[in-house]
Image (cartoon, rainbow, N blue to C red; front, side, top):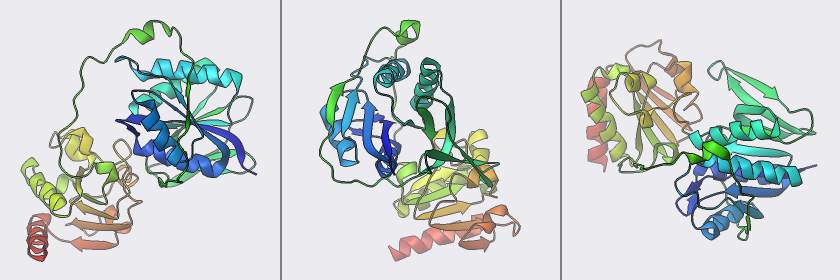
Length: 321
């Protein structure tokens, strides 16, 4: 028997919603009779159309925040709504804003938070799955006691699939004085310049690691990614070394990707990296160490010098194209 109601914190992305929010809406509608989105920002009607397409019947709109960080206002709204009609669970994306909202909501409702969730099922109540020890083990948990469960879910844990529903009904969410925490303002923001798809949404990801030898060799990773109409990623080692920005990092403390093809170049395959990419449909690894852990999950492994193999691969792709 499905759960009654699940709320989803639906983060805005322009006039749409973030990919992770769409993934959570998709999973929520498979688990509950009623799905409600809680969102904020400009153009609520556009976000309601997207939320409805992915299964939400109602979108509670916190409104435009005038540069304020969303955490305090959204948690205030969620707590007010939960006091009146508590849901079975509140699903929150694993993001900076999402974690802030979950923490503040936990304090307001005096309810615990389950984080790093990678699976959700209804087994006479909601059961969560968590990958631990670098993804080598899975722990299952459930909430007890009264009140909604606050669940923070990792990106790419579910597929985002539209259901073709009608636009969600837009309802104003509760608002009020959130105190001193509401005085912080975003004074400026910068969107990183890039070409091609976003790393977390790309169907092809080409990632480089310390085996590249130096920062200059990462240009070959970017070139192959561009030729394959994909995105360039990186291991934590070269991000920490300052070769590439953190936005490129794939892994437990970076981004989770689930492409059709993942190409690992000079990446040994620490468990923290593999937990962020092992869901790829096809994994290709090039490494000079035949005992590199990455070969344990690779569909195609090439033992050799990446500095000799990578230029040859790039040339072959150019000739094929």
